[in-house]
Amino acid sequence: MQNQVLKLKATDDDDLEVFSTVLQDAPMPLSEVTHLEDERRFAALFKRFCYEQEHNQMTGHDLLQVHCALVFEKVSSASAWDLGGLGGDGVAELMTIVSEERAGGGVAITLVFHGGGHIRIEADSVEGRLADISEPETADRRPRHTPMFDV
Image 1: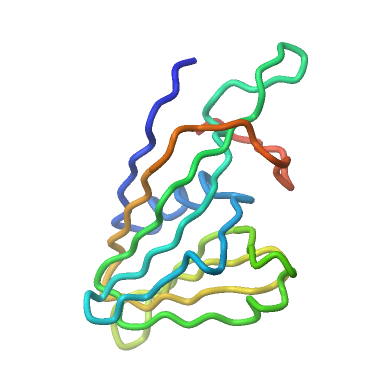
Image 2: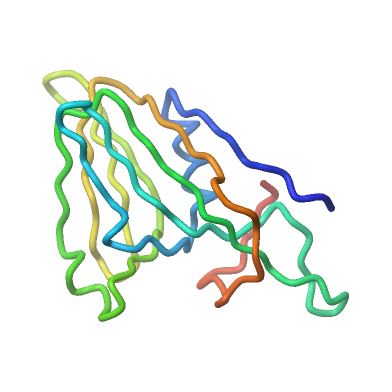
């Protein structure tokens, strides 16, 4: 299978579920997360597993990873909890993304990480992008879970 660049857009909860599936178990260096308050933007760099690529140890196809950028627009605040205790390597592994409507309007998007840490992003609405920004390379580790889905 030829390498394809992944570019996704999120405007609702269903789209965020796709983001969550694509980013499951992806490592995120804590040094590569930012909230640009003046631009009302949140951005993070992940190294996602290329679940959409064929990989099978029996055939010799290796699991691949690619760097990708996750960006949310119209962000009013971003807060992190318990990320410091996730490991000495300064990397958090994404478990899931959840969202909920806020009582006063807008949406809260929460990035939940293995080990209990999370980032809560409050925004006017769901307006996100996820895009590959590097060439795929052989994965340097295995994901925590075996995907039970087709991307």
